[in-house]
Structure formats: structure tokens, C-alpha cells
Image 1 (cartoon, protein in one colour):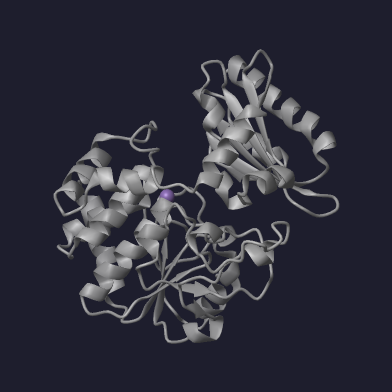
Image 2 (cartoon, rainbow, N blue to C red):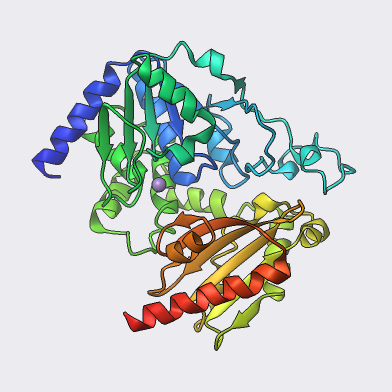
Amino acid sequence: MNDSYRTRLNAFDHSAAALKRPLLITHERPDGDAWGCLIAVNRALAASGADPLPVAFDPPTSKYAWLVTPEPIRLLTRSDNTTDSAPQHPHAQASVAQDAAPTDPSKLRPTTQHAPINESQLESADGIILLDTCSTAQVQPLAPWIDSARSRGLPVRALDHHVTRNIPTDTLLVDESAAAACLIVFEWLRSTNRPIDPTTATALFTGIATDTGCFAHPNTDARLLAAASELATLGTAPHRIHDRLFLSEPACRVRLFAAAMDRMKLYHDDRIAVLIVSPDLLNRTGAQASDTEDLAGQPLRITTVELSVLIVETGGDPPTLKLSFRSKTGADVARVAARFGGGGHTKAAGARLQDRLDSALPKIIDALTRALDEASRR
Ligand SMILES: [Mn+2]
């Protein structure tokens, strides 16, 4: 750790310590890194006498419920009625009626175990700390509130590792070379001797593991592995985290993966894979749209497949297609997603498209084919 980074960690620590009631926020549809940050920072600040207010926009999916549900995270009640947020898995709660019509998402949404909170209840906060994001688009439900809070003089701090930064902050701790925001949180807490209890260590390890595809992606470096190694001495058990993340799935999700893979189509000399999840497929497997998490990358297991797209058909007229792109080699799926009004990273990106599947599919395959051609010309 060089001196300038250490100085920035200290500055961030001072700015966080100055807040008695920081509002902790992470991005919509939180992943392991987002939850890990929220839980770890909440626990660390609470342990040193602050009264943080951790707020999420979505309840945890079944993958992260074991980690998140025991924590006192509040769930923001949305004024709109969008149904595309990731709901907690219905099978996690016996209270969800078996006979609820699977086509009606409102019936599938169980009541969350996290206490709800609305905007007016956020007024007790004396500052905002954004975690694993600094982007308006990713904190949409509170973006106007953050804006007005800032103009009223509420300090806004952010800790992030993403490139997109369009929320003005007074203290910013960003390291784009950090594979996970949880890695930055770990280095902050460690270098300032803040407490890391076993639960905090588990939360941080989860973020570090999931943002690197379990230490498999190219962003896995010595710095990250050193943090993981230290975390393993702080009371967390990596194999138990693995079991909770990957060996604890509902049967319907595994059935959905099998059914979707069985219907997989390959194009362009088997270099492009297309997976389609229709409402009918969800009905038949008993799964729901949030169960498609991580499905998009499955075809990359095939030697020849360089690009894959998962198309999830949702309702509406014209229907909304949720596109998730994954790339194994040099082809840039962020650019593919951008053609459909979306965005993301080079190897993982997404978009939403209002179109019928039969008219959208040729356009999607064409865009992917062009991405392969562009990559081969580079
Ligand atoms: Mn992250």
C-alpha cells in the first residue's frame, strides 16, 4: 500500500467518523460486493459508536439472503410499482400461496423481512455514504432525494471502484484498480484499525469472491488474494461461503438452467450462444425472472462459444426483452449493449428492449456477429 493511498484511506476514515448518523446506500439490484460493503461498513461504524442507517432499494435474492437477512438493513419503499426489481425468492417463505397465479408478479412478491423505510424517515441522517456506486442511474429511487439533501448541505461521501461517477461528492475514495469495493472497505478498516468481526469478514470475503467470479476473473490479483488471506484469519470460512452461494439453490432455479440450456441455440460457427427464457418456461419450471441470475454466462463453458446473450421475455405490448450479454474473449459486449440503449463492462453488459422476440432476435445476433468481427480486426 503506497503512502498516497494510505492518506486517502485516512481522509475517508475521518470523513466517515465525522458522521453520527450516516445514511449508507448501495446500488440497485445489489450483488455480493454491494451487500458486502453495506453490511461491513454498517457493522464497523456501529461498533465505533455511530448510528448508521443502512438502506437498500431491493431485498436480497435467495443467493444472498443468508448474509443479508440477519442484518438490520432497511428497505426503501418505492413510490412506483415497478415489478422488475429482484424480489426475495418466493420459495424462501412458506407464506407465499402455492396457488398464486405465477403470471402475476405482485402475487409472487413475498413480504420482505427487512423493515421498510420511506424518504421522510431519512431526515435523521447527517450525511450520506455511497458504497460500490457513484452513479445516479444506479441509485435512481433516491437520486432526487440525494440531490436535494446535498443542496441542503448534507455531506455526500462515496467509496467505489467503478468508472462512472456523476454524483457530486465532498469526499471520494475511488480505486478503479480494485477488483471489488469490498477490497477497498477491507483496506480502509484494516489500515485504521477498525474492528472486523467474523460477520464483517464474511461479508467482505463474499464481495471479494463474487466480484472476481470466485477468484477466476482477470481482476484477481495479489492484492486481492492478500486481503482474502487476511480475511480467512478473521473468523470467516471460505468453504462455508461457497456452500451458501453455490450449493444452496432452489430446485426450480436448477431446473430453469437445465431447460434454458437445453433450448440453447448456437450461431456463427458455434461462436455465439443465445438463451431465451419465456414466461412459459418460468411457469413450467416454477422459477421467476430473478432466478436467471448467472445464467447468461453458462454457454461460455463451451470451448467454441465466445459471446452469449440471455434474453428474458417479460410482459407488455410490445413486450420488454431483458438482454444480458457475456463475452469470453476480446469482443466488447458493452458496445453491443449500447446499441440497444444499455451498457456495462467489456465482458458483461445488459440492455432492455421493447420489441417482439422474432423481430429483435436477428438484430441481436447481427450486433453480436459485428462485435466478433470488430474484435478479430483489432
Ligand atoms: Mn462491485
